[in-house]
Amino acid sequence: DILLTQSPGTLSLSPGERATLSCRASQRVSNYVAWYQQKPGQAPRLLIYDASNRATGIPARFSGSGSGTDFTLTISSLEPEDFAVYYCQQRGNWPHTFGQGTKLEIK
Amino acid sequence: QVQLEQSGPEVKKPGASVKVSCKASGYSVSSYSITWVRQAPGQGLEWVGCLGAYNGDTHFAQNVQGRVTMVTDSSTNTAYLDLSSLTSDDTAIYYCARGGAARRLDFWGQGTLVTVSS
Image 1 (cartoon, each protein chain N blue to C red):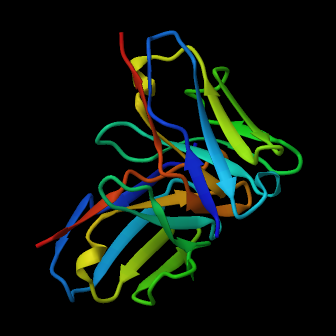
Image 2: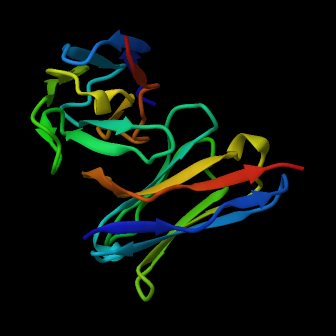
């Protein structure tokens, strides 16, 4: 199975700051990585698919990059509603594993 | 608009089976893959398996292989997850999501809590 390792585990930032979240795959997955946001008590929400494509309705402050084994989710200027847990997922190989998540908390 | 409406919470005893439903609206459930994802209390997301559209191919996580069935019913536009031989490790919120295989998970159900307890 492909292992996705997200870093950091927790990221403490203030509104207006820039957030950079990392996802590293144990094998190459081409660009088949998606990013999801999850808030307490809610289902995950798709943010980015195929490494760099924003999903419908996702604000432009969210961007994704990377290919192969290293991927990044960037939030250019944090809004209060962005504080949540973020997961990456790969669909390059079965099973389509998730990373363990990065918690983005208010500093 | 696309929506996925899941069945209500379940409490099961160890060794029992559970069936979770996921009713789609706004699209045909037979036209897209369906993926099931679960989340144990306080834990991260765990991919459970995927049912492909058209060809019906399935792929499952190793820890549910042999215990899981995934089907869709076109007449009711509903997807089902059936999990047997339940243990406490299966206690989780189970989510259905549209997509998988060659496609992102773009719409999600609200989740179904399955509790396995004696």
